[in-house]
Length: 385
Image (cartoon, rainbow, N blue to C red; front, top):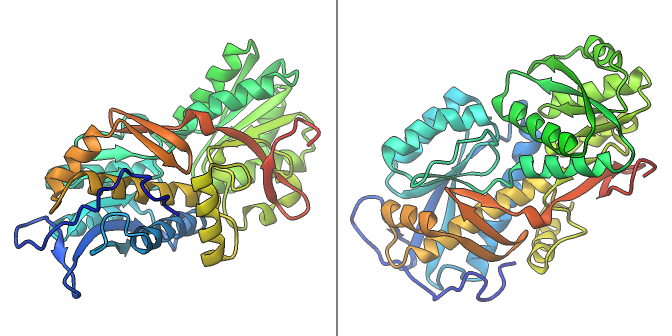
């Protein structure tokens, strides 16, 4: 739930307007502030996509239930499915931009999708929040902002934590055809290098690869104390399963891409106790995060994961910017409000900061793992957890 006054709200109420790209009048005499959102409820990223969208929907409900932007203002997400396909999402973004009722856009789990959408929204001058894509350099104010809690800082912290458990050498499995994933692997390397851990080199894998036996054999031949697996969800889980099948007995470390409904059940023995960093953990959060967890569980029957938190937070930030954009917000005033946003208190991550269109929440990083037998995500307690 949005705490009263959490956004320093002043009950700003946009008025009905006939001008382009402004708030529209509602059926009940109030005003509707509409924001587009590109969804991924189908396709290879459906698990993560549903979590992002579920979190966003909870935020939408709370904004309206608590009159966050104003008592006669309705905040509305205009959903359009594009399944994280770059061409489909670019086309959908263009359609969203041509609808002048859409003041802004929220989208994009994958960096290639964000890269395809970005030119469309910049050309249309439509302020856009990226809630998942992690390739360095995607944020580009005054139109493209990113509320994704970037994994690079979290990965670096995770590597340092694992190094403290006695790891002296490490090798890496990296999905080389995804620039965002490659940059995440570099963050793991930075953390291990700063801790004095010897690097034994990389083994590359590719998106949509399904047989990881050879890659597992290659990286195990390096005889490392630890193996970092940096890949998107299906490939990361497949690689970890292959290492488990070959009875690798060192420490495996991976990224938060393995979070998602059903992921643990797909390879429970392999994934149990494999650490990974997250910014949001339902059992270890802020008061605002606890309210989010309660509302999410009521709506969905399960606690929110870190992807649901990212969906929720993106909508929260958009609402804060709409409130700051004053009466009768336009795309221009919304872009200015997002560009001027330096800090935002009382989020589910605590107080967050913004720089060059990127949000930061370093204080909320946690190292976690799936625990047996039910796959609950818990704080990592060390190699024996």
